Length: 134
Image (cartoon, rainbow, N blue to C red; front, side):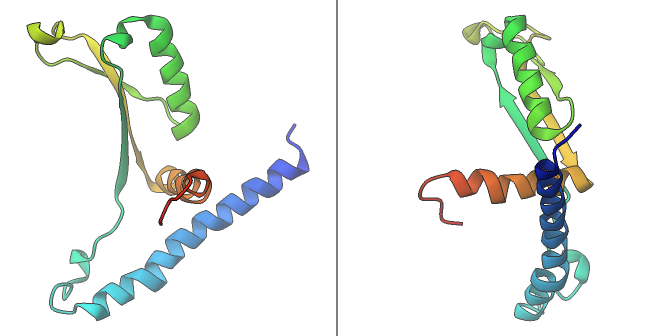
């Protein structure tokens, strides 16, 4: 069972999530349209966030199943969904890579998971980076 403190944190996170969506629709979207009406005369030309794609290249370390499993669990914890294992399309002798060899992980976030990840990234991760200007 979760403690009351963690439930409050979850509620605050969802409030921030809603604020990011509302801030874009009510604040950023109209400002972009008013600032450059020639460029954004059609509302479909205004930039919007569709997806966040996250990948991790493991290289030859992916051949070790323990490292691969650990990376999959880390990815799952960070993004909230299981990643896809990327494989080599063709063999490259100079890099000692064979065809269909496991090389990395990738996942694509859309919708609420995307905004949830973006909220955590902006408010928690970037806030802890020293000298981050953003």
